[in-house]
Amino acid sequence: MSARPFSDQAIAAQDIPDDSQLAVSFRLLLGLYAIIPLCLSLQLLDSWFWQGFLQEHLPSSPKQFLLFQIIFGTPHIVASSILLASNTEYLKFYKLKIILMTLAIMMIFGVGSLFISYKALYVTVAAWTVYHVLKQQLGVGRGVYRLPDWAFYLILWLSVAAGIFVYIGIFLKNSLDAQQLELIKLVAGGLCAGLVCSALLCRRYVTTQSGRYFLWSNVLLVLSSFYLFVQQYYFLAILVPRLVHDATAYIFYVVHDYNKHHSHPQNFMYRYAARCHVPVFIVLPLCSFVLAFVLQSCGDGALNALTEFLFGVEINKAVTLGFLGYLALMHYYTEAFTWKQGSPYRRFIAFSK
Image 1 (cartoon, one colour):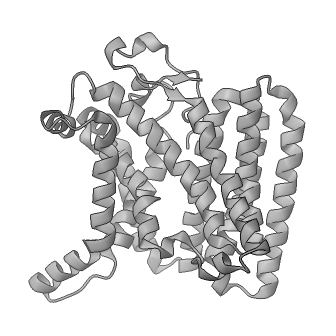
Image 2 (cartoon, one colour):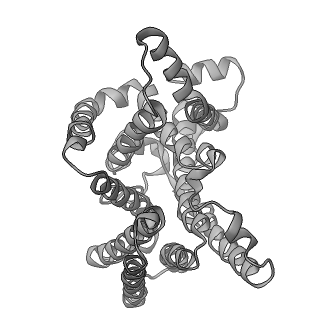
């Protein structure tokens, strides 16, 4: 995310029309971190009483569950794209950046893939993914705990570094030998220890109770993922940050769209929804979940059938890997500036306790 994503001082309430005002609740955002003790409890119950049933039957990654991808990951990426593309003023405002980033993606992951190894590209995307997820969560919390810049970035980069090693250890474990995997665990553990020490060092700058809750919740987000990784509960290790990140993003998207479109729908999607008496709250989630389901479950098959009929060739994973991969990378890029203070998006965001 950006240097201060979601986290700068919120706009004054009067900047949003009174009859369409909705605010992002920090209490609700903090409540999302309840997934941490829940997943830790499941792991402990499985170890103590269920004889490792969950460990044996859960997949090594949530991505192996199509249902998981339809619920987490893909929908919030699709929602971000819909939010940007359906509001033409946003699309025009960021047009140059979108074009340049599209060309960069084509060069790096299209032409570059002919010269750069798959593993190098994978690690690059993994690092960007982890950075995106943790920068968002730490950025949201920054508005509450208000750390000095050096303290914020110390905790951020320790979190990201630890997260990258955990991510690589989970998703590339089949291509790593035992010694390499142990080294990854050792490095990630050292970074987590450094993260805890840094949080203890920086806590004196946090003057509010809610700020301390947010700070330690974000630290525990990384620590719990590392612990579950070491215990080989890979599904739960990825589920924890994934759920918190995706749900946080949806809260911002829905609040934005409610404040922008509730009184006077300003794009075709919300005008049509108003005619059908569909509540504003569910329009973006409904559209993004339906589209994610269609793309994930039917996209590759439908495109293959079309290209085989027209050209006699099949294009493997053109939708799930190509198109959705492009949307994911574009999402990581655009979220770095679309929610910054002063951006068009932020005109429709306010915060509350």
